[in-house]
Image (cartoon, rainbow, N blue to C red; front, side, top):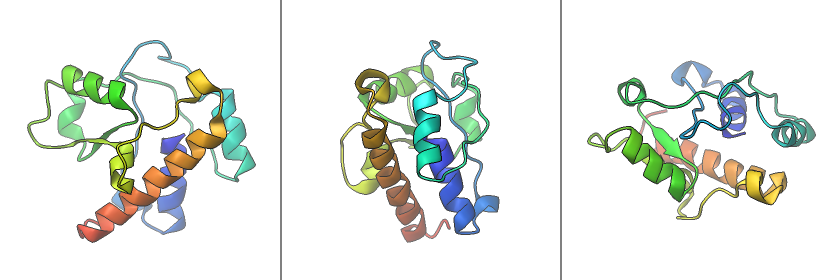
Length: 138
């Protein structure tokens, strides 16, 4: 969901050439699967195109490829640090910290509530754009 929402936001602002946006898992459960039908339904409801996507798992080699690696919750953060061998360059962030919160993104896998997840993702995306703007990166 976050990949589609953020892609939509940067395209609306004419900044798509400034970003390479990707989504990867820290587990193997969904490898190869497309976005969940609840995610697709919510994005259609709010008029955001779904980015074509199949789940892949992040690997150590990805650390060098990206400027920002963003986890959605405390488990993602633990897994990212473990899988990537730590964070020597300070690239790993918890998503809602960009919005001034230490909350986890509501996980619809457990709650079934895609509205809460969308609201959290939107908050994180807006906070991230604001963060990058204040740093002069966009």
